Amino acid sequence: MATEVFFYHLERQPLETVLPTLIERVVERGWRAVIEVGNPDRLQPLNNLLWTYKPESFLPHGTASDGPPADQPVYLTSETDNPNNATVRFLVEGAAPTTFEGYNRIVLLFDGRNPDALADARKHWKAAKATDCNLTYWQQNQDGRWEQKA
Image (cartoon, rainbow, N blue to C red):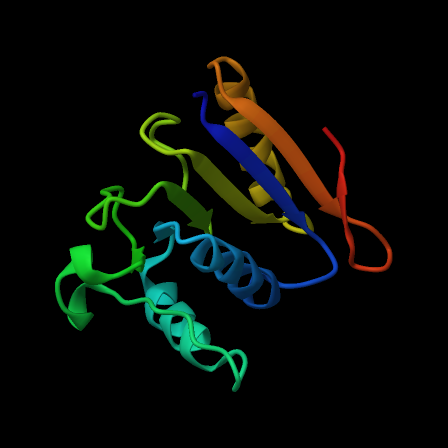
């Protein structure tokens, strides 16, 4: 099975709104995920966000400081490893894919208002397209809804 690579072009909603919703879907399906953060300084704020973004929700997750990574259904890191045997990898805050293999799905979220992030996403799209991955490109419309663009 070819890896699915999803590109999420954020324009209307910030990462802090979109990421928890996507993680909820992964957890509901019983999948394991790793969230790679490109900027290590953003690791703890995103960890805190997943605990507090919605009072009635619980997303089981952790970082290296929360015990064995293998015990975490959702693992946050600034490294490129997969210590919880995740089938889904999220790349945020400038994290770049080092491979398109070994996962059922790779989800790259980027700020479409940032020219550097947009240029990097285009570069990653070309690299993924050169593999046998199935690519999907999602962009927010004026109402903040996701539309498949490619």
